[in-house]
Amino acid sequence: MRFTGPGGIGALVMAAGAGRRMGHRPKCLLQRDGVPLIERTVRLLIGAGLAPVVVLGHHADRIEPVLQRLREALDDPGQLRWVRNPDPDAGQGGSTRCGLAALPTDLDGVLIALADQPLLEADDVLALLSAWERREEAVDLLLPEFDGQPGHPIVIGARVRQAVAAASGAAGVREWRRAHADRVRKLPIHHPRCTRDVDAPEDLHTLAQEHGVDLRWPEEAA
Image 1: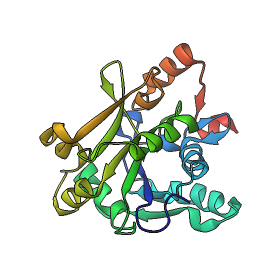
Image 2 (image 1 turned 90 degrees about the vertical axis):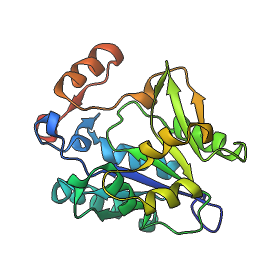
Image 3 (image 1 turned 135 degrees about the horizontal axis):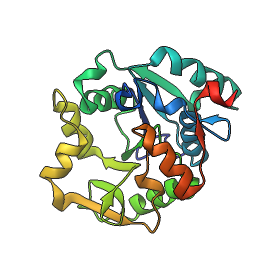
């Protein structure tokens, strides 16, 4: 697998948010075709040869049972782990540091995915991994871009990882990217799959109208 040994690729799934704009509900538990978005994301990453670490924070008690059932269903339970950020209100940077600390130190790169991207497909993940392997030596961060809008997943190299680990407070990958634009490579894509997540109730209507994707809360899907 890609994640094993020196020079491999690690993976994080960010699921620590409070979901304030969604009524303080865990967005990653929204279901597409009966499957929670976080499970869908984890399966995509595992299918690409990665072993994701999920970063939890707010709503950890509700998300962990979903991850536990998924891990028990995997052929190799070691392909999935999760950690809790004890202070998720400190910002995305703190959650990223929490996840990075759970990964081996000798990785060539780390793919960072969001837990609430309902349009993401396996080919999107594989395209990013392939582009990362072909990157120029000066590239430390790779991100997909659609119509001028940056998306996820992204891949960061060792220099970015070290900088984020040494930062504090809310500072994380976004701040590093703004300060080192010359070391960022954008991967042009021709679809919005990497740029669509769900932040507010109106996003559910947009997904249904524009993409025919119907997301439902678990109690609605039951």
